[in-house]
Length: 214
Image 1 (tube, rainbow, N blue to C red):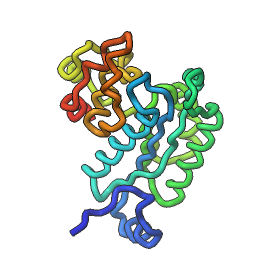
Image 2: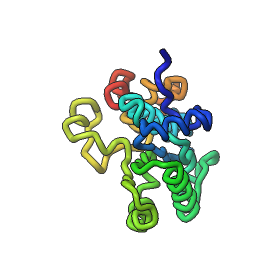
Image 3: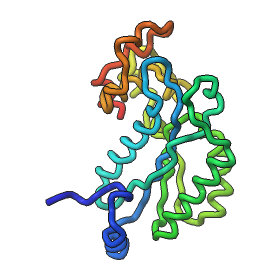
Image 4: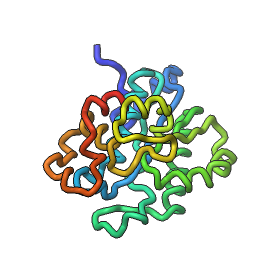
């Protein structure tokens, strides 16, 4: 038998309605990330692919209780705009759209909503707005970056280049992010050029590390 779908956008309206009416579904995850440069060796979709993978893995583990909604692929990336190809939203735009997405899943019936973040540039704006969001959306609404669950012991055990939490993670296109890409979407890693960069940390990454981290 096919297991219940974990991605909201893959359901028909009847399937969604039936699952909500049965009270099977209790929570929704909204991923947010960025499309931006990740040095010379990682594809610009890295943050989005990573957070979506983690969100789906969580929903699969908690199946059939949790769905993953389509979130925000582009984020707050003005600090990377000097690298053409980066897509960036103004903080006010980002927060307005995120608030509308949260409102949409609440109106659909969810009382537990997790905004799962995959981009460091989104954190400050979300934290600054969160009290206002909690007043506006009176449900169990949480914000978390996917790397927040890692401990100092995890970092020391799994990462060769040395990391201190929370300040060193995820690190931009460094060992942590490169390892996740090698494990989850290796086609996005240009291993033929990663050693051409001054910083050696990305080339320390392995797919085995990524499997443990993600």
